Length: 450
Image (cartoon, rainbow, N blue to C red; front, side, top):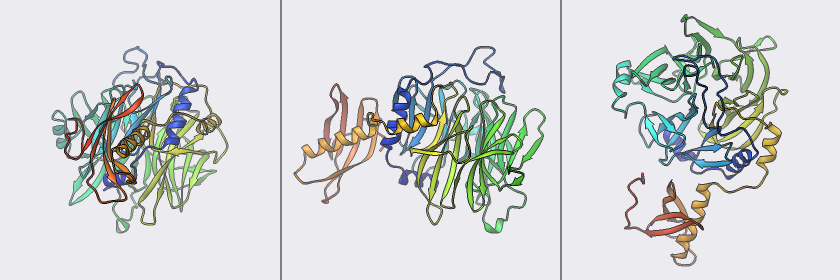
């Protein structure tokens, strides 16, 4: 299961990415409050009836088992979530006060959740929510992996699956949190993306000529790019072309903030390409290419559309994920201008504008110095605390780490002798993280998830 795979593969936050994000934030980008880039009315009511949208100028991304948030105005990088899990498919709400995501914990089915960007509180809006599970059950579908797109603060589009004869069939759904209701928009379709005006919904649909003998069409399969006019109900299939030559199937797409362009991840056999196109699929340029051992994902435009963030998944010989790299490309520059920024995945920009930075700035900032991320600081302090209270020569690693505010809990595993693994509790004080208690019989705080 993909949840297990993520939990196994991504067990730590990359210091380089945190340094880059913190430095980027400190560079004077944007402001704490700002107007949302889309002034046109979206489905369910424009600018909240004339009130400009305001929110946090920030960037969210996944690393390890958590979601991280970079406050671009305040120059802070913080871990947003306290409960570890396989988070993915991040998307800011129009007011930038919440982030939608898919979440897998252990062997459970995927949940669709929303995360408060101030408190980090995670709220399930699917099968664990007593107010919503009947809506999902009534529609005959369950949440699944795939992009999420908000229509307004109460309505979003997501990927779900319908189980038939032991097989999962992806479908695109509309989730209305106010009613509540779940409506299937299109069968055999996934990865919805709404345009800024809220009138067009793009998704990837199962091709009519898909050969089921080669495997069922599912979450990792490419397909036809379709744009649905939500007012008329008319669909039109988009063929991605470069210099008049048709390229291959599509994995996912996203609209630019001005609603005039798209970023399209396309199977350009045997490679995968990231194209910058118009709304008819005509490519202005290829922003990045990768071979059969890689796959692009989750393209997210900056609020002004100047550049694009996305991730590159490295694939093993059997198609398993071996890791993710966060990448960026300037949309107006020549082909293949992409740069690797560090480890991370599923990036999502807040819709609040950010100005004054270009890709060269990001590269310089990545090479700059900065404070380590909180998780790395906790691990270092925790290992030092354990060693001070253990016999000389013992080496340890920290597992099952969880941080909540100024308190952290983890388990210390000895790596060079067979010993019991004690629970370690830390608190953050004026001098940084300090040990509070350690032992195999102590009780962890009630919020500790393990």
